[in-house]
Image 1 (cartoon, rainbow, N blue to C red):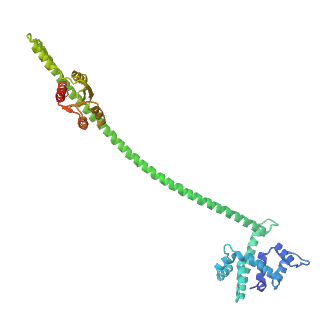
Image 2 (image 1 turned 180 degrees about the vertical axis):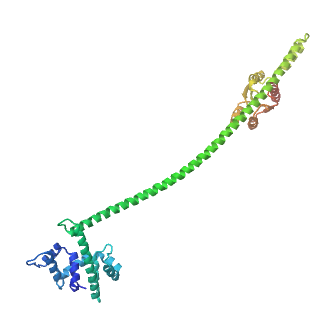
Image 3 (image 1 turned 90 degrees about the vertical axis):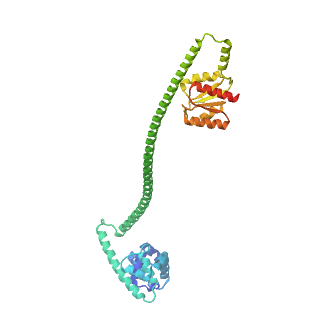
Length: 380
């Protein structure tokens, strides 16, 4: 349908909704149409409508102008469909993003046969929309100050709505961003909460282990004290035995001194037999024994010409024993007072280095002396 074929009432509505007074004046001036006498907005609108109802250059220009104006909405309108557009207008509703005049113009321009029915339905719908708009106009105008234009106030209201819409969209974006932050913080909080629970459990486990270690330490200290007491008891017993032996030797010496007649040759021979075997320069290690007898152990070793290296025998690390064995020629281990580990470490270290190792039955001085004599005979 061409523009001059549209019913005057509908075309009047379209021109009134799309052409303001300034635009109408420019079009009339362009086509040299002069308004004689009355040049009011109504008169110019009426003249533009009259010219558009005839097939002329102005009507063709106006038709192209409206086609160009509403062309951006064609794809959207085509997707909606004629029937739905017509029903939407009759219901007094709108379609987002598409002006009402674009919908009316599309229906009229695309109408072929049956265009009268479309025009009639559009006329009825626009007539009722006009009534509703006038009621709104009536209500709004009553609340405005004297001399206010309803149109201006509605435009201001529209501008405020657009501004509020923009603010609302910005707030929604900020809200979405804050929600994302909240979700991230909530996730981090849950992770920290889980980590806290894990650490608490770990602390409880560590406390349990610490308590067990303390109990074991107390037990070990108690056992070590008992071991030390037992060792001291054994050492004391050996010291008493050694004192007893020395007293017996002293008594024997005293008895011998009472013998008046002793042949010099016999005495000399006896003295020579009692002299210790010479082990000059030999380094001897004594691992174990009585710590209180260390000076006497050293005297016995020195009487053979040996240098004594003493170790108490109460150790837990084999490296210490190995260092001692590495620096001596022979090792003696009393088995009555000694750490089992020390004896075992000494035996392995001597075997590894090919050095002799003697296990003494007791920690007495005579036992060490016999051991040195045995070693001397073995190396003679």
